[in-house]
Image 1: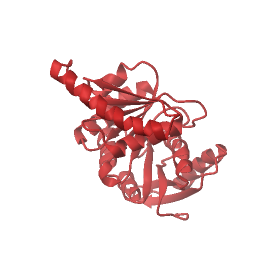
Image 2 (image 1 turned 30 degrees about the horizontal axis):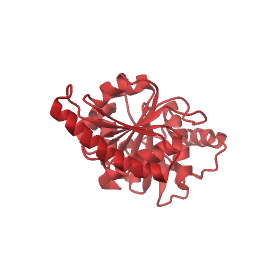
Image 3 (image 1 turned 60 degrees about the vertical axis):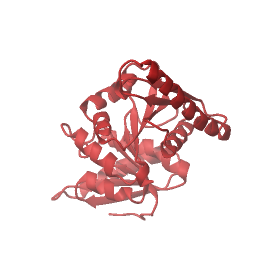
Image 4 (image 1 turned 135 degrees about the horizontal axis):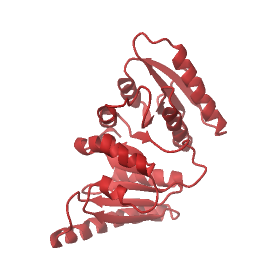
Length: 272
């Protein structure tokens, strides 16, 4: 079943789980802010009937309609593995959103490999959604973007857009992933932060309401998040470092993100 597929949309993976419903609800504002449809995709395994897929899609559509937001909803039933179906759909999507734990997409015991495959191979940003019911009626915690090396314009653009969408403060973290700073590291931090602050200042001039700060840390992002004071609603990282992505979406990263009730957005600049 396919209803009016378009060439640009926000795609949400649906599999009948509550986590998938949360991802679909999370995706509503993404679609509304861009003025594009929200496409709900259910992937069936060989031998599956379509009744379960149609029921799951109806439940997701009903939850979206209950928000009262005027987003156009499309539905699709794809035949084949969920990750492959989502990757193919990402070619015509602005973002793919999936639940952190679902019945089919990220099964227990292989969450890291499947999530990493989707995040690295997708042709658009991938959101792995955690949290309550996915709605944004209340302000969220900070939006944190990890800057690894020179600030990437695509990554910063995505981070600013997401922070503005949530009316959330943006924290740009220059991550060294090392031990305590030596004197030379401190000078490198100052230069990196100065460069980052210049870029952020341009965004601040364009969006005076944007609340933004920058910080340099000599620790893994997961360690920084585990010790972070105050809530974090969304973490944004680049997809260029496959090992780092695998760590974030694997069991250890998932545990830290779950404890923080924090969603993850992975951006691959090469695909934008």
